View 1 (cartoon, one colour):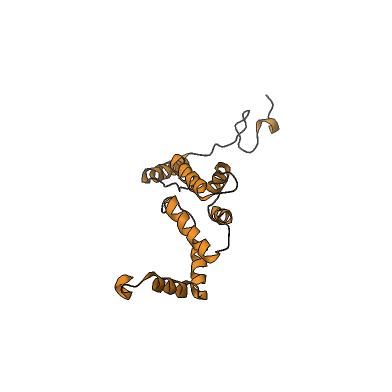
View 2 (view 1 turned 45 degrees about the horizontal axis):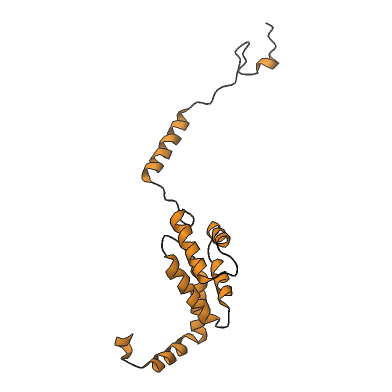
Length: 159
């Protein structure tokens, strides 16, 4: 940025930021970024993802309380991770409790992580499915006469 615009004082940078992000298109981009960003523990670190989301929300809604921002960010987690964070945090939600709970849950459990299939697992599944196809379906037959047209309880042959 400084290579493009040169060295300026903070007031100039502040006015540039305000003109860029207070326009409707800038707000629209920021809202879309917030809505599309869902936490993935394999791609994102909890602290950086959370603070980025908090910055986006506080820029979009400067009058919103921190606890409300934390609740909105909490809803961006999926399924079990959201539930376990809610269980670990006490109300009102605070940023540090939220981040600590996220890091604890992600490091101690596999919640929020996707399961990957080993190539060996897929070969094993293919081998088992081939063996299943080779198995023959047992034929039902009468135990008294050996006919396949009926069972022993309906057999007309006398003992």
